[in-house]
Image 1 (cartoon, rainbow, N blue to C red):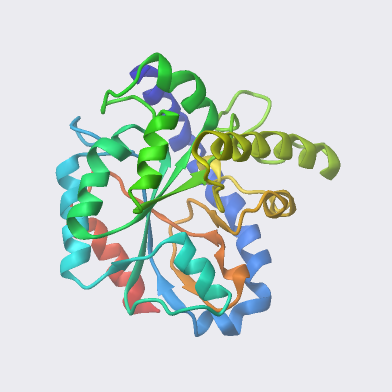
Image 2: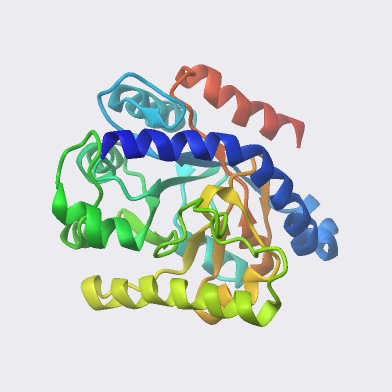
Length: 291
């Protein structure tokens, strides 16, 4: 299982440049009509974690100590975590956001998001969004549960995260977190028409939406694109499935306005384990000061 995890991460690294290129067109599509509003929007940095465990740090693995230092830095520097619910409410004219909001997200649904991160969220009074892959929960988690180094969240684990009141669950596809020669993530294939693509994506997305409702009573409103590879044609399908916010892997600032469209295509900074907390947070600080 751990070898498979490392292979998957290696593939993700190879695809990241293509993912960023794919994100740019959709970002322009979503924001071109809202440039003026974006300039007056609230700056929101978003952090993307994956696995948090006691192994040596890697590109997609942080140690619990690093995660603790990160959250302490945010706390000490006046940042307040915001939930997807808060952001959605704000874009619909309800409530306000804190002066220095930050969004914490985690992709893939590793068990250590519960065992290692949840206690830290409680320690610093914070919240996060954990986006899970349905097949990992159905197949991998029951076969090899509750090892912080490589296990995935079971349905019971996901229910525990939801019950904590600190974690919202996102849809990371049921079985499209792959590069199998047939499709890269949930991107549209070359030569595939819009109807074919919409049917394929809906068949996958709706399965995880349904399973989450059946197993936990929770209906996700957040979708994280596998490998950050986005497709313009995905948006109607995601909206039909109740998705109100999407997460990419583009490392850039966000500006949240009262327009719900500003939540489609949230950029995130990947938390590589190769950097210290100070080095990583400097990127957010510099982007904030440059806006």
